[in-house]
Image (cartoon, rainbow, N blue to C red; front, side, top):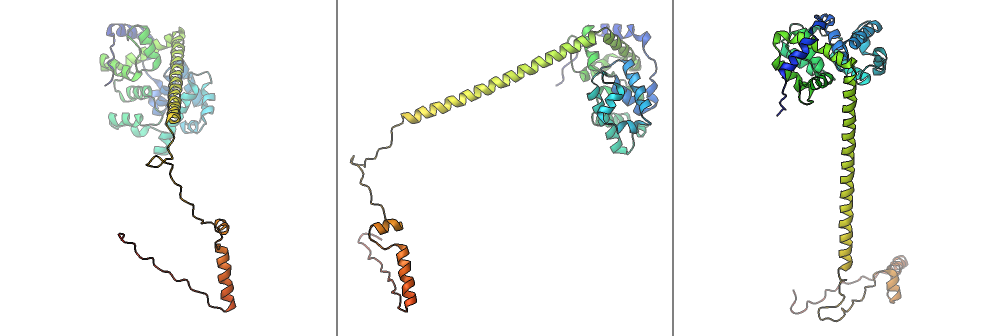
Length: 320
């Protein structure tokens, strides 16, 4: 069961309306669906200015989107700039999505989505490899008119800072919660206003500070988890050694097996059978080697070899 997200609607409305005047009314990349996908992939957890400039650099460096797709991830990072937020991970995911489009249609184009049912388009985007939820929501909002509110981690941090949310939550769940409190015909305007708000959150330095604090907490939690695993492993090893030592003490305290018979007297040992050639030779009996030599000599001398007659021992009385 998903966690319920409580939105302070009064503070939320005040937040987006305060930035509505600076919001961009139309999205210039909406005419080209691949450009919209690329720009949206550059916008989450970054500023609009950064996304616009990176999109322009990509267009200037490539003849078309397919030429940009065939670049290595490091080359893509070089195009948008190594200082771009999460540059490597961002370009890795974008390259995966563009490659998936190409493998499906043998070209980098999304024109085939035009005219399709909105649910099918959303399913198509969600199934693209490496596709972030923010990009899906923004594409559906601007290209298909579906009233969704794209939410990234920066917007979640902003909403917590402005007390719209009581505590941080998953961006996907926050997006669903905001969509319920925003009028469908206002979704585009609200999204554009929130982009302006997050830009100001970035430029004020608060977004970066919150991000570093969160990363520090994640690192501390990771180290604590590793320490707990190490302590658990050490405890398990100590318990194993304790069991082994206990078993060794028990074996040492156990009395040795008695060599006496049932009557309490030492058991009479049975004489060992002289089975080996050396033993038979020591006892005066012929060895198997001597027997073999005698039989071989008799066979070549022309004398008949004496057959050995097997005599069955008579049965003893009382035995069957």
